[in-house]
Image (cartoon, rainbow, N blue to C red; front, side):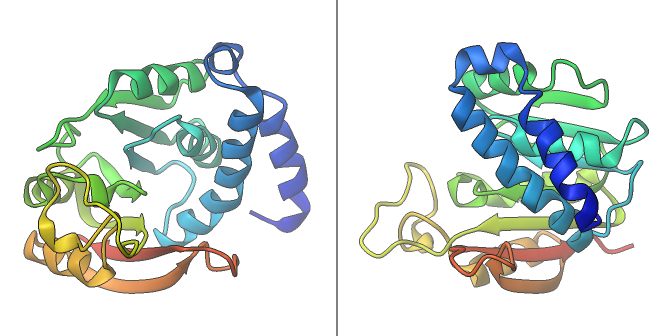
Length: 219
């Protein structure tokens, strides 16, 4: 997105917080999440080689901020699948996207994304992969949901020293978080091709603790 349009775009997002969503969560928190999403989405779209009109899935969409911004970035001919496994988050997503016709809210599961086969040009998981209790099954489901040559972006953070592994998550994570090489190993075993790893995400944020691992489904 050209810089000269970014301020106006962000202002539009910040002053059009859905009333139903604001009623469930503080308006300040919603604006903060939308502002962060507005900074990240153009960069993530570039990394995943997306264009307006494409279809993307946001796995573990949480409050729905990334889905909202992606829906506007992709335009009316594009589509966003916004998923989560928890009913509270699904309700927040539905409230966030209530006026967006190009967003499909979908309930995921521990072993499956529940996405249609070959529905997406790209898929991303932001701050989600380290919570997966069945990463092998989810890897297979992600591969099935992508079109040939589709891209998968995993945004996550290294394990925090001394932290506890979330319940049900494989013990090799080493704490709360996940090392990037483990993600590479697991998803290449699922059939993905590793494209690149960015040690800092977003790349323009010197304080960022997240990294991004990019994969591609073989054509």
